[in-house]
Length: 287
Image 1: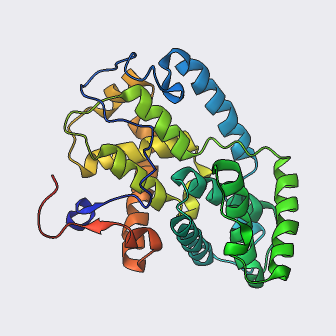
Image 2: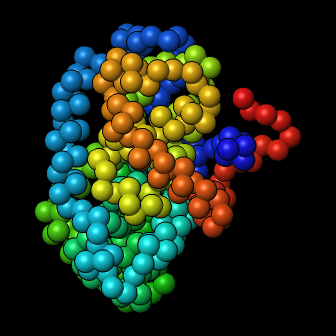
């Protein structure tokens, strides 16, 4: 746990762009009235909209696609594709939302279409291409990360297939979106300045584990909050806390939390791209 507690820093500085650290251990409904993304007046409507969208998103995923469809691929190849997506997001300064949207699109495509190893590059580039056009204000031009015209044509073809699979339903209630929602309603900060940062980091790491996609994104977001609270030694009764703010209870997220910790250790040992962007503080303790 020591080396884990010394890791800090998400890969993009814009990840918590519209989330300001609160000043007290209580909700302040007037604090974010200037920000349309955090209007607590509509928090129930936002919750039900996210819940509905989450169910739609889950319907496009097959958690067993490696055994059912992808005979030429394995989880390690998927992890390598996520590494490449991470490099693209870093190189083009994409938002964290774009990163998670890309991974969702990748899993959707792999859940429905059998691919071969020669197609790997085109698949993850297509998913990033679609996600960046949807999420970014100024998406990077395709020619910046393709090699030739033939590859561009292949990406355009895969894009058509992906959009047809989704029926052009690109709205995604990802675990990142859920975490932003939960953080808005929690609105606390009592020795928790790094709690959100750790939770976002764990979400980035969690996508490497194929076994996590069978869980609802809302539970994954809660599990990241729960796990990071343990890492930061934040003393709380989680079930009481979850009951107060409408989060998932401990028995619902314990298994996901264990998977996240296993994935974090494996990512460190495998030197994944996400780990390369963590700052290891060797000289002083952060907490």
